[in-house]
Image (tube, rainbow, N blue to C red):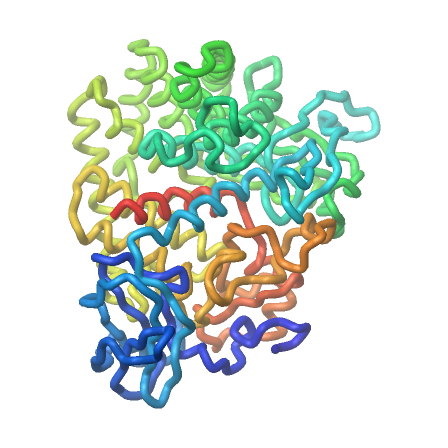
Length: 560
């Protein structure tokens, strides 16, 4: 164990398993199977039957990258792709060590996918989580006083109920822009894999109502989002206290919480999401779908009379995250796309084309809460009626494939087959990796080429343990996963382990918290700068947006 009881693999201390890096969830029969090994030499390896320890395959390591900058060591590949017999195995490297046991099977991702998507239930705000649904991670209802409209003198603020929705992650704030991106990814997941989450598949309170459990969970966030709209049609940017709260169980967080002024970014993103939702729910609940569409139309009216304001800024006495985005052109574009798909009205198609002319290329970076353009591009390419101008469709596809090809080039040149390079291990690096994987998934969907699918799969395998720390970054999954995540709700639980299925932020070479700064220096290898510690909020917190990206990528890769 390391300091503060942190497992050695999370502190950079030497571990018997730290030099053989595998996908701890296991490998799909019929797909490529590689492990990464930190070694100064090319050595023999063998794959053993985990029960009998008899060797079933032998080979030699192949050099992937000498002096890999991200990990600080030479990286070698153990390729055992020819092994397809289902069973449990161990990878042993002579003179280095061995992996924990792992399966090869045709169905290894179902448990991961269920836990990742079910984790959104545990983020529900404004309600109790009883044992029937929450297992050991129960708590009484929380944040039932949300919220008051922020005023210069907060004690005179007007009360406007805004209960519900999901906690953002490690804090209890609720941010429109991050919620929009996370929910947009989950709606995209439902569109592309509509049978993946049938009724009762997630074991949530709505299970048994004859509807998709995924759509039921998404609706919890959408109902809150509808409350975030003011009479003008604009959407409040966020709902938080004035300052971050101390880590307490959710039901004990009684700090006053406020709605902060609308922003055009939040309004445009919510407009797009609710227009998209109106189509997703039309068949099962016409009234709710109608509410979503009416809200989206009102938001568009607001946007027509409110030019971009340069990004939301916190008032001087507010210190919770701002989620400021100074460019709302991607959100406006996505809103116009979704409104055209929802209504067929030509004025929205005209808006799409006008906004497209201002963005060249349409898509040049992977998505996150501040860049929703991948969701807009997917909506255009998914349109079966081909109602959009063909020039726009071709431009969208070309830009998507161009970005995917750039990511593939990075992956092919990297020792760990990773889409991040030294200098890119920022706060939330794991989220960035999965948003890169999302681009590759979309490219593979619209142009089915093996390289795109394998590139996405490689990013997922990094998250699941094939990384320099031999750590699966998803709680409750694999042999070694985070135990001390930044999530105060766990402190009210009756379990020593965290809620399963939560993705942590991952290595952060910019040392944005004191715990990281104490443990590492600027000379440390970037992909190792992570701590499994409640003190390390910049490497060990969680986010609904990161989990949504993981959910999409895991479902896509399980269908390879």
